[in-house]
Amino acid sequence: MKLKNLLFIAFIALSFNSFAQEYKNAIGLRAAWGWALTGKHFLNEKNAVEAIVNYRNYGAGVYDYNYFSLTGLYQTHSDIKSVDGLRWYWGFGAQLGSWGGDFYQFDLDDDGNFFLGVCGNLGLDYKFDGAPINLSVDWIPTFHFIGWGNGFNEEAGGFAIRYTF
Picture 1: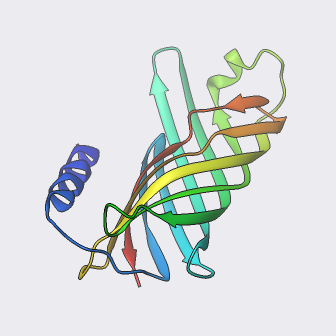
Picture 2: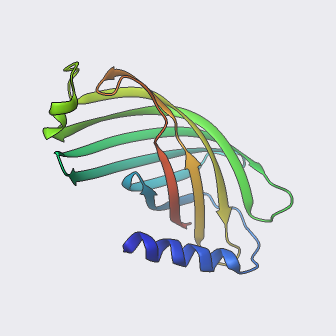
Picture 3: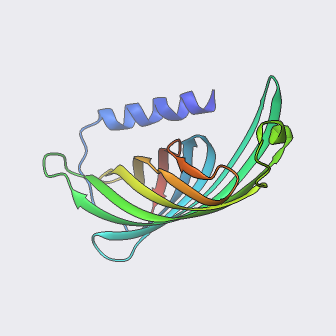
């Protein structure tokens, strides 16, 4: 229900004709594959770093598990000239985390509950003019090379709403 409210607010906000101004820092929430806290800091006009702290708790049918991860990303932003305030970005980074619960029933190779990997990042970033709000949507494909879920994982990414300052 909270996700529906958040998406509704974002839709209404995007419906207004607004123009962007740049921001230096932002902090907020991400939604999609669990809930996450996100912080973003611009190093200069085009380059930023983002930190994401993600937590998921699933309980459905046969199994129940918790998931926690830390992701750090370096991003390069470029303006989309046709829409004021809209930028696209790409980047890379790293992720580490762990999981717990009874998901071990499906962990047939017994590779443990810790994971470490590298990430890519591709997304859109929108900043409202006159309001300290930033919205973004992105995809964060990950390749875990240590621990649970070794290999390519394309499911990460999401929608973020942040307070800018």
